[in-house]
Length: 123
Image (tube, rainbow, N blue to C red; front, side, top):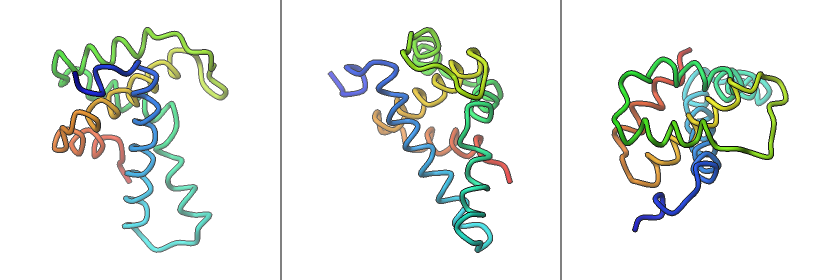
């Protein structure tokens, strides 16, 4: 059994959040050279629940059955955390997006991961 098969959807979202954030920050750094505060401002446009929800909705019809299962399980998972700045649906879809990223990362589907991460950032 692979590690990603043993983890809860929220654990997949935990690692997925880190992978997505690192990807976005790398893309921001590769863009225009800015002051540190500008990097943060640019990155937070993509590292938030609303942006992640929108990306998930954009790619939803192109997901494989396994990817759809990961998304469904994460979206339906009950978390002790609640959305601070967004409604519950946005928060759940963002968590599902992060879980998908975590699943792709841990299952070493590098090309698919890159493809979806690239959909999440548009300057």
